[in-house]
Image (cartoon, rainbow, N blue to C red; front, side):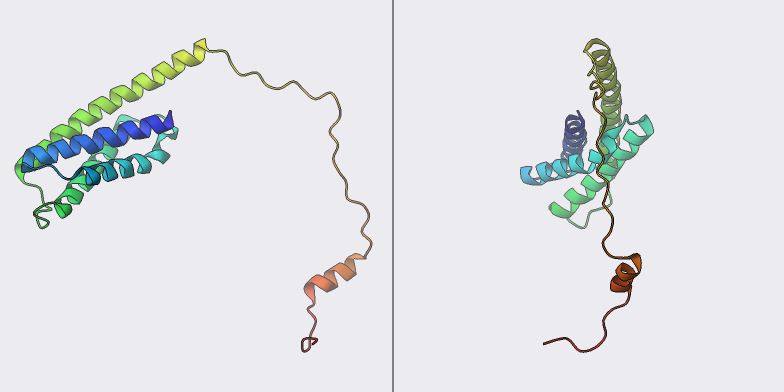
Length: 164
């Protein structure tokens, strides 16, 4: 489930940011760049998917992806000096951010409701039965050398030239 959530976050935020960027500039970036960025976003979102994301976390994530993708596409695009977005670019990214946040928030709730419904219906995994025989724990035997000898060998190094 975590891998699917990472993929959805990466593809939705990455591809819709490309659509916003293309609608404002008039040209689409290369497909390898887009797929590489979407894969990087999905990989970076991996640690975030260990729990349910709140709306504020999704907003922060999507805004970060939008800004990063804008800079990424501006640097790789036809005009690498235009990193500051134009008003139409800013509006396009803001609209896409709102759409992606709404979709991901709804999908996050739906996924966890579905998981709860499936967990209530599916059989639970049973715990293993208790062991009948006592657990055997190996105990170390008596030490042949006295403690002072072991300490002397480990703490006091031999001095002198190496033996040839």
